[in-house]
Image (cartoon, rainbow, N blue to C red; front, top):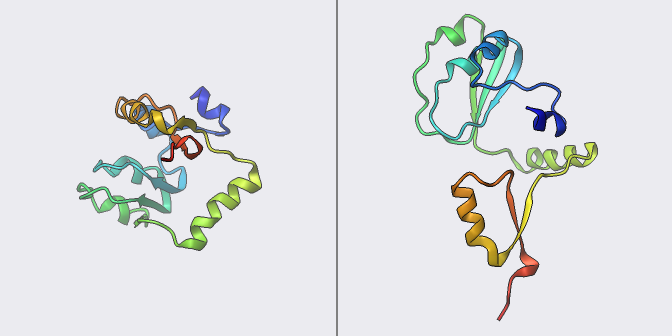
Length: 139
């Protein structure tokens, strides 16, 4: 969590920490769920309060079952989005530019792409790789 604070986070909630998740019950108005695989929605629905919204970002196959009372009792909503439009997508880099937020990435040469792919498969990539196209050998 030290790293997340160093990157500018004011608060961090780890979903693997059952006590912290319970303590955060109903605390949020909005939860953006970016988990890329099927998972139990209940813990994330429990994080939003009355009229709160959980938005699934991207496709995760089938959404596992959850009790509809999780939506009904607190007028919660579950929504989803594949991608924003051009205007919405442009808002992110505009926001980052305005607030001086820069991406964390590792620049790799084109010749190292196989090594980078292997590291990604081993979960050895700290953030994301960006391929330096200037290193592309043209014949």
